[in-house]
Length: 319
Image 1 (tube, rainbow, N blue to C red):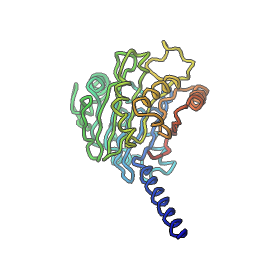
Image 2 (image 1 turned 30 degrees about the horizontal axis):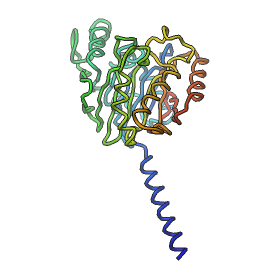
Image 3 (image 1 turned 180 degrees about the vertical axis):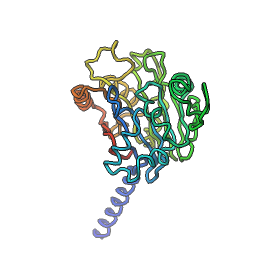
Image 4 (image 1 turned 60 degrees about the vertical axis):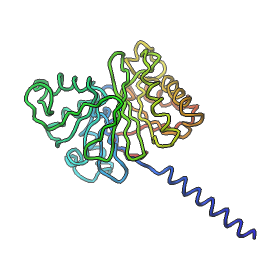
């Protein structure tokens, strides 16, 4: 009888372990093409995201493209040419805002790219059309805006809060406004594949400094996805260490302000809801000593049990 009971307990434990592994199974693969803010033009914000076991990538911002692809090839993430990754694997671009460190790779690589869609909110798209793809600063590779339309890219304007299919992928995107030196707008993208989600934030300052409710409204929208374990991770920037004065944040976060915001998220999602949750830290600004300090401060102030991920250019990981 004891043997039967022990056997039954073992079966239950195995079943629970199997169920737990299924819950923890990765849903997305990420290839960082650029991870920094600031002056390193070979390593600026750009992240490839695709459902696992596919090559249907969307590029989240596009500060650095070719140099990041080359680094990923060197690391054996891709075993094809850089041209094939650019033309065939990248299905489109989600641009959070039009600052050059988030779009320069898109602009420079456009002559070598294949036909695909560029997604952005109205203000961001207007800036790209009027100041970059305007047939003067750069040829207009799009299908909207000034000058002759080469029509390499379809420029698709995203409506805030409306879910939009991402062409040639199984993913959708919903956009939310962020404040990046109020009233300048940046964007957060909630990407969905089936019942799995990832949240990517472009540059943003904290609500307290920006005199905004944008982050509060974003946290309110995604809190249910954290409770249901459907949100697999959040990409969010930390540009400066805590010593940076508020008047010189220029619409960015410090470790202290990030933790303040994540505490607000936990209040909405529930106690201990962020324990073990993955936070991908983006846009760390040089010099190197500042980056080291930011990482140390985040680890020291992590009282929520968060799992911080510091992505490296060309090294893939899963969410």
